[in-house]
Structures are given as C-alpha cells and as structure tokens.
Length: 409
Image (cartoon, helix red, strand yellow):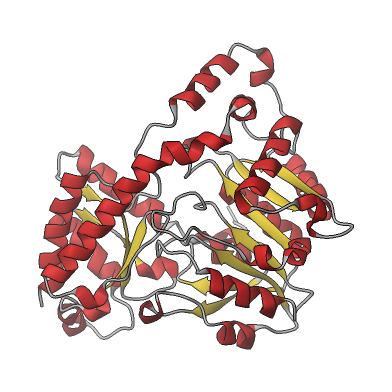
C-alpha cells in the first residue's frame, strides 16, 4: 500500500498519545497523576444536558442538519459573539456581511478555514509555543509554517517587531491564539491594540483568531481582541470558537467559524463535500440553550483553576524555584521551563542535544507516574505543558512529586 506524501508527513498528536499511555498505565493499577488533560473533568450544565435529552424525542434530531448548521443556531452564535465581544457586525465593516458555520469541533473549523485559504507555498505565521496541530494543518494544506518564537521571560508575548520581520510577500495568514494553549495566558489589551495598528499596514494578510478558551479566564482583565480596536480588520478576520472547553463538552464536537460571507460560503461548500453538517441532536439543543448561563456555570470551575494555579506558584516558591513561575490567567494550562531547574543537568550529562523535553516527560511518567506533555510538541524546547484541572488533593500530591524531581540533579 502506497500512502500519500501528505499523510506520511503528519506526526502523531503527542498530547493524545501521552494521555492514552497514562490512561493505560492507570488501568493496569498504577498510581498516575495525569496532567495532560486538554478538557475539563466536569459534567456539563444540567440545563444543557436536559435540552439534549428533550431534543432526542424529535426525529429531526437524528437526521442531516444543513451543512452550515441549523439557521437558528448560526444566528444565536453570531448574536452571542457580538454580545460577549461588544461588537456590532452589522456596522463593523461597511458592505461586508458576516455569517457563522457550525462544524465538527474547533479543530474541524480550523481545518476548513486553512483548506479554503491556503495554496501551495503560502506562508502562515504561528507564534511559539503553539497549539500542536497548527503546523500540521498548515503543512497538510500545502502551506509553510513560519514560527515566531517567544520567551518565558516575556511571559510568551510575541514581539511585534519579530512578527513584522517574518512577514513576506508569501504571508497569507497570521494565527492568534488568545487565551493560549499551552501557556495558559492571554495577550493584554495594549498588545492587541498595537497588533491591530500593525496589521493595518498589511491589507492582504488574513488573521485567524482562535478563541476557543475565551470564557475561561480566571484573573481580570478578561481577554480582548485586536478587532475591538480596529473593527475594519474583521473584513479579513476569521474567529474560531466552540463548546468543547466552555461547556466541558469536548466529545460533542461542535465548533463555530465566524467570518465574512465570502469565506463562509466556500467553507460551506468544502464541508458539504467532506463531512456534511455537524451533530444534529446537539445543534438543536444548543439552539434552545441560553448562552448567558455560561459565565455562571464556569464560576466555580474558574475558582478551582485559580486555586490550583496559586498552589503551583506557592510550591515553586517554597522550593526556591520561584524564578520559573509566571502567572497563568486563562485556559487551564501552565508551561513549565525545565531549563531553569537543576533536573536538566542529569539529562545533559547523558547526551548533548538541544531539547530534553521528551526524555524528561518519559522519565516522569515511567518512574514517578506523573504525566505531562513535552514542550517539543508546542515548539518550545525543554518545557512541558501541565494541566491545572486535576482535583485539589491529587494536584498537590503531584506537585510534591514534581518539585522533588525538578530539584534532583
């Protein structure tokens, strides 16, 4: 069997791979602290679950939905976006009409967008550390990922000057992910305002704003966006969102794309020839769901994330590792920098290489039962992403193990 060159170039998702390994080890009876989770381990809102249950009485809930999604849900998604981002799409850009497309999760939404915009050789600027799938998606579509590196010393905020240095006549798209996976931070409003002014100089570049963690901020100020400063940028901006994170519903696979109608029309065409419409039952439930309930639902979850973030900061400080701490503010991750801790020395003694993140995470899992995702997957060497969602007591136990490991040499 001869596989296509496209699929042969795809690397396996390290996040899913390590999570599966940790799950298998736990099933074998081993004590595992799984800090790889990219999902909230909480039950979705009872109101939402009840709506799914009630909508299951109707035959239409088990039949094809319109390719772009049920009109009433698309309208609700657009209205919720305008309410939460304080934007009026009817007046934002003169002569531009905006639409929403419902897809099979945020990942599917991104794949649709990139598939509709990228031609062979187009460049897509991505900020590192990045979500693991961005470069893979760009490569699969025939584009070229162009990476802008950031530093933990700047709390992973990309330099606008560095972004401009990477822009060429081949640059087609810039991807902005705020709140960010894997850092658990969001870019401050001043950066967004400056980014907006910079983008006015490059009218041919599209912007993808991945906002899947928008509601999951647990320290003020809340996330803001470049198009709130310059609404005219919405004419070449694509917003990606969904229910997987904010409604703790990763398995229900519902994502949203909001963009000018010129683009959503072709996304609809592409989706119609690949996957067709998203889950009808969940769409119909969401059509009846009050999106204004989401902040109320998330409030205790945010407190939990804030408490775990504080526990992490305290543990690092108590063990004289405060220099590797930055304040996570959103999403539910933290990117741990091994290069500033004693543990990395023993790995340097074994071999000379630029990145030890995979070896470190393998040893943590195999010998200590602690599962993290190596920073190699996020384009950030000698780091690891840890999730903050674990229950408080197991999380503190995991921190005790982690601190001892970080101090070993």
